[in-house]
Each structure stands twice: as structure tokens, then as C-alpha cells.
Amino acid sequence: QVQLVESGGGLVQAGGSLRLSCAVSGRTFTNYIMAWFRQAPGKERELVAHITWSGGGTYYSDSVKGRFTISRDSAKSTVPLQMNRLKLEDTAVYYCAAREISRIEWRYWGRGTQVTVSS
Image (cartoon, rainbow, N blue to C red):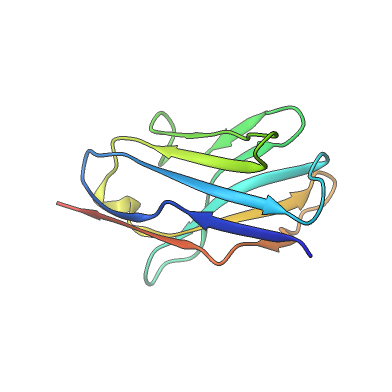
């Protein structure tokens, strides 16, 4: 059974940092792209960043570029998201997701972790 489990969310002041982690299990993700999405209240789910598990190629949305860093730790089977210089608008539920490189649909999802940035 494939599982993606997020952790590391919480309350942080604007300008601070948080490190999220997505623990993955149940299959190998060699041919997968791993991603972090977020959804703020009343807004659509937004792709924040993704990384190719095998090659490490990354993508960032313009809203987080230069502040967030996605990585993958093959030994620990985790996908961390380091978030620096957090802004109020980064407040959202953050979700980990995975899809095969050759497919469009994000097949696997975690349940999410809340990130709240306060002033």
C-alpha cells in the first residue's frame, strides 16, 4: 500500500522558516515526480514545487522561487520542503503528491499538514 505522510507543519512568524517532510512508502518511486501542493482557504490547490526522484530536476512556482527548496532523500525515503522567509500568504494546508513521469495525473496524495504564518 502506497503511503505519503506529511509532517513538520505548524505556526511560525512571518520571516521565519519551517521544514516539511513527506515520508513515502509502499513502492519504489524511481520513475516518479514528487511534488508539494498547497491549498489556502477559499482558494484552489496550487503546485508549489516538484522534483524528479531519479534525476533531481526541480520546478518552483513563481510565488516560492528563491525561498523554498525541495529535495529528496533516497536513503530515508523522504521528500523535504525547506521553507524560508515565510510570508502570510504562505498559510495553507500543504500536500505531498506523486505521479509517474509519463503521466499527467497526480496518482498518490498525502493527507496534508497545516502551515500557518502569523504577523
